[in-house]
Image (cartoon, rainbow, N blue to C red):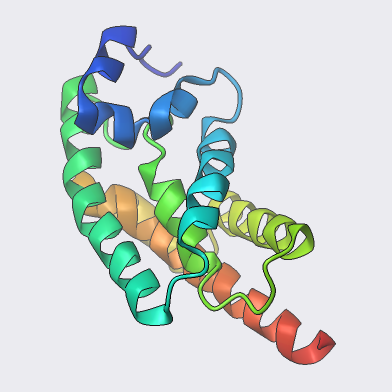
Length: 160
C-alpha cells in the first residue's frame, strides 16, 4: 500500500505541481489522471514554435527533477504514484511536432504514452529501477514519451 499523501502538501506550490495540481491524489490510476491533466496544458503550448515548445519541455524537465525530488523527500517514498509531473512532461514529449491538433491525435498520444509508461519496455524499466531521486522519477517517463513520440511520427508517416 502506498503512503497516503497529506492534503496539506497541496498548499506548497512545488508539491502542488509535482502532484499534478492534485490529480496525483486520485485513488485510482494517478498516473493516468496526471496524463489527463497534461492535455489542457499541452493545448496551451501546442501552437508554439518547435523551438519554444522544446524549451518548455526542457524547462519542465529540469524543474520537474527538483519538484519530484522535493515531494519524494517530503513523502519519504521514492517515486510515489501520486507524483505525476513526470507524466505531464512525458505526454508533452509524445506530442512533439504532432501534425494535426485534433481529438484523434490527442487520444492516440494519450494511449501510446500510457502504454509505454505502464509496460515499461527496455530501457524504460531499467531507468525506473536503477535511477534514483528526481532525475530517476522523471527520466523513465521521458523514455516512455520518446517511444510514444516515435510511434506517433510513424503513424503520421504511414497514414497521411
